Length: 83
Image 1 (cartoon, one colour):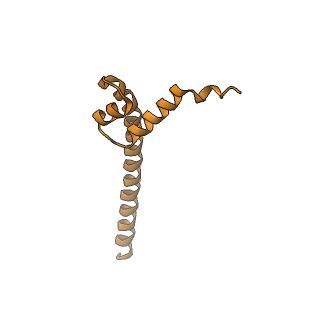
Image 2: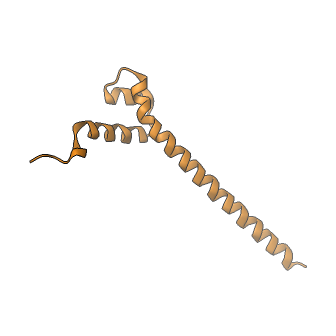
Image 3: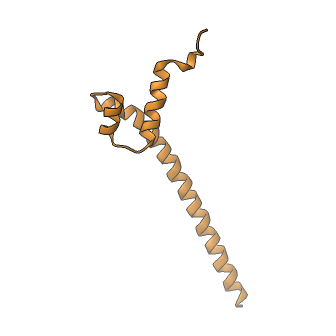
């Protein structure tokens, strides 16, 4: 029986390395885990986490902007009740 094409050892290594990078450990720690001597190889896997960080930051900024808008609306509503 032949395994599906996406279950090769190479794909497993890539997945494992990307998941390790997502844990937030240092580049040196990733290099040791992956058995790499070059920083370049470890940086490839950290790139995925950089993209995820950017998406998270954008979502947080959007959420904070919504909170600010809501707070301003509540403040305006309270000011109108006094008049």
